[in-house]
Image 1 (spheres, chains in turn purple, brown, orange, green):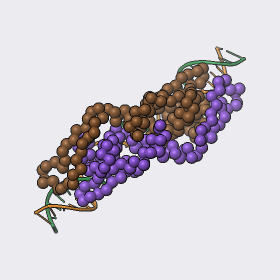
Image 2: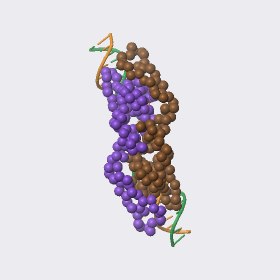
Image 3: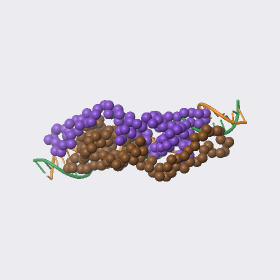
Image 4: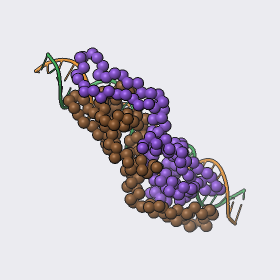
Amino acid sequence: MAVDLELAPKTKRPAGEPCCEPVVYPDVAREQAARIATIAKALGDPIRLQLVDVLRKHAGKVCVCELVPLFDLSQPTVSHHLKKLREAGIVGSERRGLWAYYYVIPESLEEFSAWLS
Amino acid sequence: MAVDLELAPKTKRPAGEPCCEPVVYPDVAREQAARIATIAKALGDPIRLQLVDVLRKHAGKVCVCELVPLFDLSQPTVSHHLKKLREAGIVGSERRGLWAYYYVIPESLEEFSAWLS
DNA sequence: CCTATGTATTGACAAACATGATTTCAATAG
DNA sequence: CTATTGAAATCATGTTTGTCAATACATAGG
């Protein structure tokens, strides 16, 4: 797992040699990085982060009509952000009649959280 | 801190009334969300996430010349990503002669990590 | 000096993104 | 049925992003 890079003091190359040994980054790490980056990207917008924050604090399902007035944004824009979060697997939604309720999928944040700490 | 949204079953509005009570999102939370989203945004690219990953695993300073061959990218592109990470306050850099060494600033990830868990 | 090397910046460009206006869809009430 | 309402999708637009080629900058060695 750990990439073993050398941190030896460098000297100017003898004009031809490569600077460093080419280090191969393991594919599994790349895939994990891609997964985590997808989550991070979805959280990388203040609105979406606050959406997740609100949803998490309620630990239940929240109606879109309650989320929209939290922000100075149009309903379609909030819907757009919720879609992004859905596509990233961070939230799920459920329709009950006219209303749509959103909730956080906690497992979706676990790998990221583990990597971060 | 906790936003107290009601989750009562909804009924169709009497044509005029707003759907829900306007809920005020506290400003302090907005600022925190903005800070965390900045970090998340910077981590929201697979390359940058791997860069941070490598730097963290080494818990020391790593030469750019060792980072570039990890990716199938040009040196300017890697430099660009490192700059993004620097601007987000996630990494710092130090020049020693020709070489530039990068390192993670652990505190930069603390607030995000705390929020996530 | 001059040349070579490691790194950063600039310019350009396609792709992705955030946003709002408008439209579409689904479901409820009458 | 029709009208209305909540939510999602579509369209258009201006902005940001990731990438590389080319260039600039700084430093080390001769």
